[in-house]
Length: 393
Image (cartoon, rainbow, N blue to C red; front, side, top):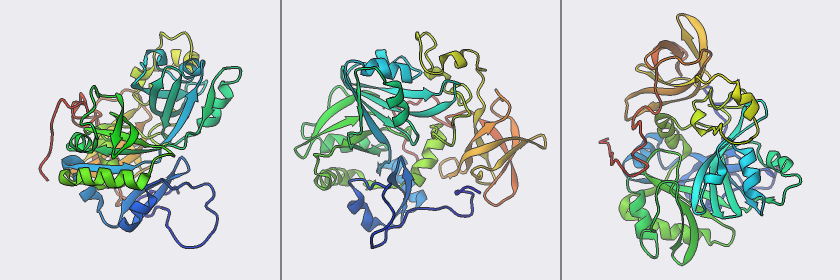
């Protein structure tokens, strides 16, 4: 039985002494989080806080929806530099990377030759021949190195850590923290370099919540403690606090933002996962193109709502009394006041509203129905700043 089975899960604890933790990396804000009582998962071999003793999961959710919340993530930026950087990335990703302008971000989705998904992430084009790929948890570094053979490109780990500030007050925090005020332009998926207390920092108009927000990139030369003190002081009047992944997980399920390795994996194509819009079939070539040309286009992944229970991660989904799929993500939404989930169905193209039953955390099967993702804000107007939606608690 995998962890997160609804009964137990395994998280990292901190204790004195030396021992076997060679493959785990603490982020630069570890000492700042320590007094909050963090409990970590391992993500890209980096520690990322799932929860804190100082903040409940529900309180963290409402912090995100109503004020501003900061998550120090485990995303792993890889650096691609050199004359062939663009050519390699265009080969690795299903999107046309040549269209990503300098100073902008793009969404990078990578497949195996058979069309199965490897990983996704945000690609930053910092200069014409310099990119950072902020990848989700997954085995991509060696894959990229192998396919770079014969190309004039250097692939490296820049030792950069990503934090994200999200919520309706996120841009107010940015304006207050920036030494020169709000950067302009700074549209959705834009990149800027700003001064935070005299330190120049790369920021992007991105996030994992579908809330208004931005991310900042802590590099080795930064004084991380001074950087956080500056951001915390600027954000205090706007309710900024550090929170954990458990709270963010609720919002990302509501938003239909997928998690690599669970919602999709090597057994699913982009079309299975509802990510077909990120496949540019007109490209001359990319890894997996031939397989995807013949792949079914209808998705297998769907949202799910359950009025009487919280869907159990890896729990069974039945339709007409027969096994029909499984839960890949589950939570209880304080906003929607019901259980929510993402499910991978055996049958393709099932319509929203399809009646199913789902195993929930209490161990019983509950009535539920399939739902279109995202569960609300269908046009993603909130993160683009086109809709202000601060719900009452």
